[in-house]
Image 1 (cartoon, one colour):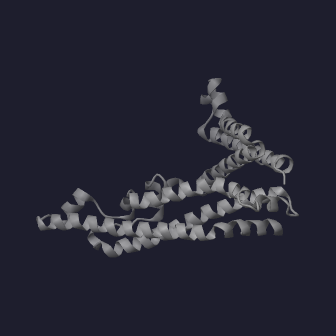
Image 2: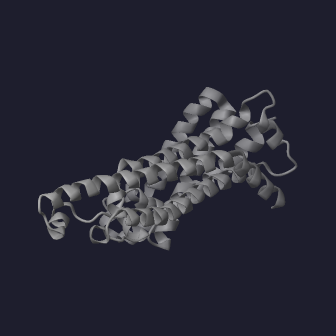
Length: 277
């Protein structure tokens, strides 16, 4: 366990500066977006006031200014989408960078006096830490941005909205910030299983090169079929109407867990038998 934690610390420290830079960029762009959105809204409101419109008529035409409204702006969605893309890119980088350079780092990792599966889980854990750090930071940023927006908009035009309301309204945040513990387990558990699929495909490519690339893509396709096999099978047998939605979800969760365990087992085999130093 101690060596595993050291490996996790190593993986996190290797990306810490980039992560902090990404968080700073995310916060800066969103704060600029809040300021621009508030100015644009107040310009419209002031124009209406000059025309003799009342506050109520302005609200009827333009509604309140709120963080919920701002969450539709590209200044809010764009940085989050970039972070999601960066995390997806890092899933591949976390392995492939170790094979690059004169002193190939993967050789040093695999020669450590510890299970090679510890290297696998350390990389997976580091990625989950990065994801949860981004989510926690975004929640904190929402509170700060809401206070900043409140300071820019007169009280009669501003509507306070909770983080839960914003998350339920915004299609991206709906999955990033789940409303219940069950949704949290489903979304992030599913995300972790998808991570194991990608890790397995990467190790297949590293083990068998071009053949491994094709094998990895085929494995991902087969794994997705396996995950949804209960629904596909029941649909083919025309028996799907016999089950409640909750039962279908439980079946899919079970098949997803099986797929995740299978992916870890295959990765363990590849690390021990095919990926050599």
